[in-house]
Image 1: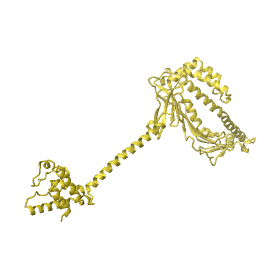
Image 2 (image 1 turned 120 degrees about the horizontal axis):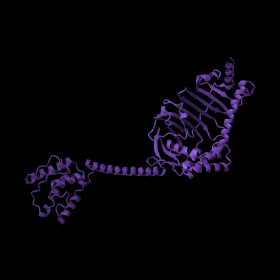
Image 3 (image 1 turned 90 degrees about the vertical axis):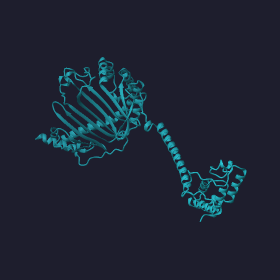
Image 4 (image 1 turned 90 degrees about the horizontal axis):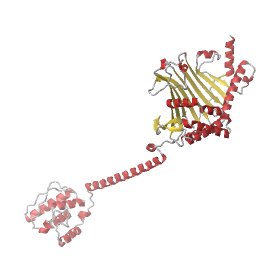
Length: 500
């Protein structure tokens, strides 16, 4: 049965001239259910039919908040002013008279229950959620945009990601590399070189200032060779342990061979292992087999006797110790010389960039490539400055690298002709990591045989030299091998075989 307050409200609204559509929309907006409103309209229609005998318009089976069909006006006469406003969705503008406005107030005050009834409309809740979703979306977009802007600014300041910049330029290239090298304590240096025969490039010309036809007599189209050496040590220590690996191969016209040797120093004791070598050499090593470790302890008493094996071992031990001592003595002078060379090179612009440095991804790491060219017109002045600083600092252990004889040769016509050929046929490339530490340096030189070398007339010899740095400032793992034979034992076995 319909609610009596609801019926009274509908009746008063109709009496004021509001349409059933307007009344239904007002009730639905106030929280009344669709069924309650429909039942109330039907009940009001039934009451009006019984009391007045007037056939009222039928109520549609479903009342929606937005009703497209117009509702027939009550048969009670309505003034022109009220008729012009009956399509409004609220009561106040329906009858545009002061009396009408006061009547609406009376209806609302007399019947507060339709608007105060605590019933939640589903569409009203959905609209609230929709507004919250929009607010959350807009807020999320603002927060994400702010985070992206902050991260982008941070990356730009530090030169990260898409804002990454090459660590060095032409003005500080050499000094920057020296400073980076000076920060390296432990590392693995790998020096590799190779020689191969390739098809001659279109702009290649013979280098007569360096090579003559006789230099190519032992070279064929299939000639190739390589040499690789890696060294791992701690440069902070004057008496540091180290280990090295050397491999050399050659495939020439006369014969082919391969050498592969491991060597290390641990706590003042030297070890060596021959992994590969022509078999004839093993004959002179007393039956030494491949991959067998040899031990040389300069402090061992057995190598200081007067026997032939001990004397030979002592000679080798002294040679190894002297080499170590020479390196330690020249190390400081070499670092000072490199510092002076870097300063002089940047000051005189010894190196220029052929093009803008580019970034590359190698094994998941970013590195910057620098293609360099040497300015031949400043080579002499650069070397003169280096020689002057070497004498001022009294760097005696680097005389073999910087001396007056070399300076005289750099001033000769022979050098002037040769440097032109070197520049035209040599490329120099350096790769740095994002911190400016050099990770690789490569020099490639093509050597074009003279026209008299008929066998190689359409070929060129390519010699390459590459230096790579890995395991920078990582902990060293150098351990003494177990089961190593002493050098005295090896030399003693060799003497016995010779005596047979």
